[in-house]
Length: 103
Image (tube, rainbow, N blue to C red; front, side, top):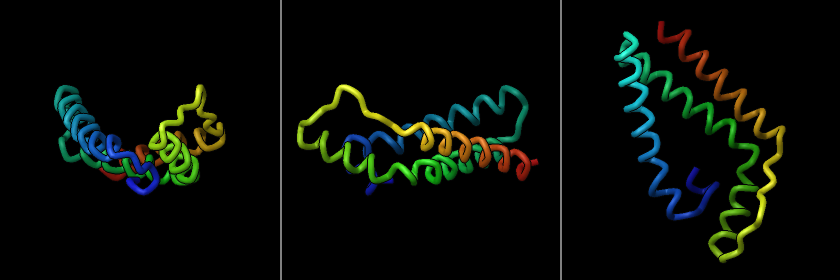
């Protein structure tokens, strides 16, 4: 992911986002009565699904990141809808697979 989005701020913030989301998922799972291991499996699979889902857009991300590093900002970044649908589908599929495997 770091080579897809070569922005130092992204490299710094991205791991913390996943730590916060994982901690939140474990806390929510404990509150709802799910096992902590199951919630960690779901978070891990969702991360894998997100990585796979963002793969088709990696070249656009790299291009936009280089533009941002050079100081160029666009008014709108056109993210292809097919890529968005693929990303959402892979995250949902991987999360469903994790739920089935964590039972």
